Image (tube, rainbow, N blue to C red; front, side, top):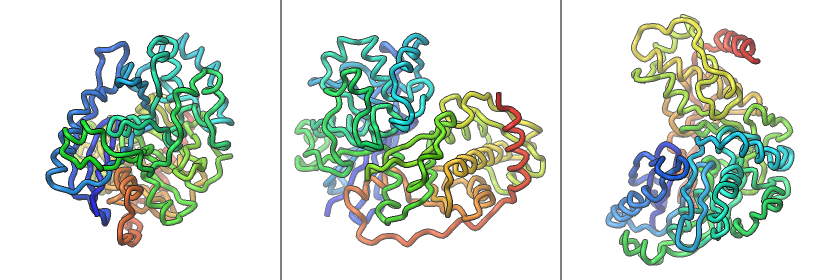
Length: 450
């Protein structure tokens, strides 16, 4: 049985990862995701990324029998393509449209009750990106044959086949109605239905590699390309495959995406950046987010990694980091972050403060979502001892680090489930006493609300 290569396109980094038939990670290549400001607007430079992808696949072709490629990607980029390729650059979601265009779009976007998609800043709603292209580049939209979410863009680049997919369309795009499993009224009103290709399941084989890609990489011409899916939903694959429902998951990276699979969507508050993602089974999934990875990096600065001793010093000093240190989303995106008190002058204290802050925000969001039971965590937070110990002290049912879990690992399971399922990991044992610290943080945060 051949191996699976996962193309994992994140906002900060893009990876090519190889898993064998038993689900073991065998190889990885990574590079920063390139951006460009040379075009009509800031863009994710997917064309500059393609040589890296070709080179990585060529290296892997020399070492492994690659049978399948599946892409995953973040949920806030879309590619307007024609027969010959991109017709305009892929918009960087941190770009802000002009106020008049934003107002015009806001007057047209469907209500939260229809899409489960809250109004997000900058270009985080994919529908806003397509609206900007239609208003400012109408000729490009007229000549386009499809508007593809990022996973399906890469599937098309590799295979030549156009497809849409529900986890990607359902990722706060304004383009999908998850309760009726159809495109939203925005798509109909704006005349965009012709740009949305037919739906395929995330694990469907679209077809073999384009001949030119096979030649450039040395991969076999029958190497299959799968539809792919939204990265946070790929993180859910191991839990859905095991029949775990309900289950609370924190999938961390540049963004911390927090999902209460099987939870109650009636609890969702769009003003707090809560939304209904769509899982690979097509179900609305109560979710919320904050820019955990970026906020941690901003708070930690150049400090060395935090330790439990450094975290204890921060707790004893009573130093608080109050939200928010990013304006890109989260329950307090509209409030500027603030540090109360002095950070202890010991190595790792600044990083420990960052991890404590991210744990408090994660815990608050889980509570808003009504999550119960052990919380599963993957990504960088699963490797952070301070975040884990703080969460173990905050969540009575425990926190379970999934060190091997990631969007790439979940996607690989769609391509080929591992031969032997791994036993579930144990909850994290070390705990920090967070009760008094959380109470002070909650009080101080509430006092800062406008």
